[in-house]
Image (cartoon, rainbow, N blue to C red; front, side, top):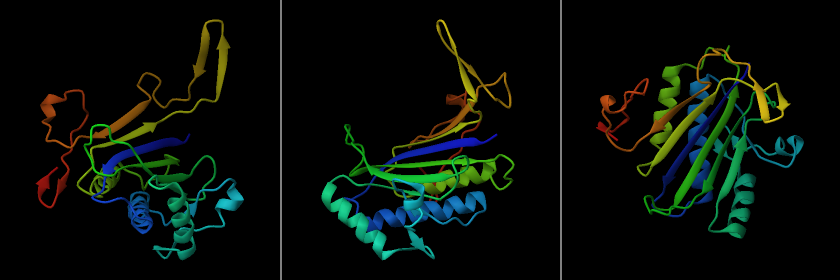
Length: 216
């Protein structure tokens, strides 16, 4: 059985994002991703095919590759002010990871120059490097990218759909669940305010996020 995770964060910058700045954000994410999973992955540009994508590495010894910077700059210039790029670890269909960074919209003007960071990965639960504590540390590291994070969530799907049987009035889904009597999705949410645990009795755990000695 494979576990699927999706982390999404909305945040902003003081100025419009630049290509090298985006790469530095993605590099920061990949470094902390490796710490969480105990890995040292290679990361590639996303492409129209697996073969094509594997031809273009993003980093060389954690340094952005010049040719990649040129390609991203060219696309950004063409699509400005929209920025949208993603990277991928070259894994197979059942156990891989991807990270994307895209310009967003902010109808409430809560954050300047808004962006959405999305991290998706699948992992075999027998991987003993992934623990709850390491996930929390990763979660905090991503929040601390800057001071304009207004939303972050982490969802986990712990089952798969091997097949769907059609019925007269809809569909019956056959699950492969570890605990058939429990909700098969868990989530974590970042709230940019101080929240007392007793205000959210439904939460399994409320974890404060501290940056430079101050709770954020």
